[in-house]
Length: 287
Image (cartoon, rainbow, N blue to C red; front, side):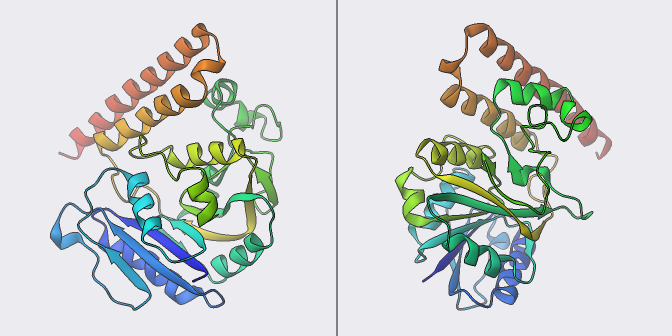
């Protein structure tokens, strides 16, 4: 088997089915299977078999996105893995072209493609730098918007890179991530300390540490609906900011003076506090 597509379903069967169908309809030149890891909480929300290429792993205890992806890989047959979010739709040639390019690369870690939102605009998360204290500061101060062509100020979202370019970057998105199974296993798979968010950044970081290249391939694209699962959820918000803390403690805490770490931690706590207030207001308005 050339390719295994790993999709995690969490109580969104209709959305997940669209993602699967887009793979079945658009991939023409690659031998592939789809492995669905069903993290659903409710029986009526599970995915039911509907194609011989689709393998469903049922009754999985929800221990986070990374854990589910690791389970999917262990139950896959492909030499290459594509991690694909459930809230995505593949376009014609997206996988065929990206897969063909990926196979020809040497010392490649992960590869991502151009990620489009529902409004047709680029989802900036598909090509990123690592969230160092300085990169994060420039981003939160809005300097990347003021100086988009600056490699310093635009480092976090790589705003200086044309969205249709093909280039090595520090980090690509886990919404569409091609990686060789043996490379994935070599670096230990996804770190399951990250329950939701941050596991893709952490994986890319460890790939770079091992000397692999992460590639952004902007010649093809896919649609990412984004936030269709868990939107306006306090637990999801908690996971997002918890992941920031986990990543910083794992990779940066011992590289920076205490005062820098203190400022970073305070900044994360403040943003989390503000985000929770805003979310609670939204939830109260919606009853």
